[in-house]
Length: 158
Image (tube, rainbow, N blue to C red; front, top):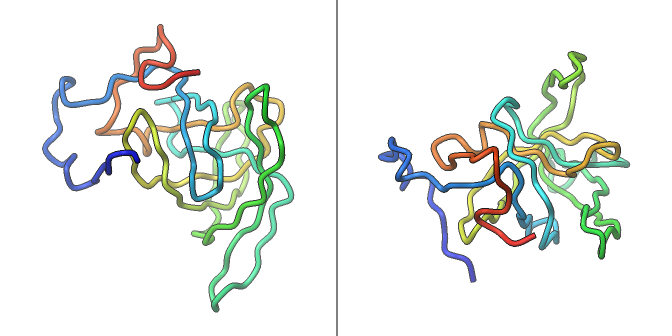
């Protein structure tokens, strides 16, 4: 069992010694979606995190709007599809690295990284052509992580 990582415990973190030292790529888990191991690219240039999603559809559940989608791990030994559901937080205009803006659905879920857990928001996007199915943006890592861009897997195993 991983140790809880409380957002309230971070309010006093203001020095690099208090931050998790992570590489530009780490292995994470998204247990609410059944994903125990995925590679994530940590990108402080991106504001919001992104998760690979296909077959995205909105639906009603308990009088609330939810989103259903299919994702997959980017690990060589397991790229089977995972059918996921999450409460829909709304659509956001996201500007991609090529400068184009698109509306993407946004969901919230727990992330596990290096023995810590916290809740983050993901925009859902088709990342088929990209190396990592998960991008962790600065909203997810601010006040938590310090990225060593010359290394990978400092907090996790590949």
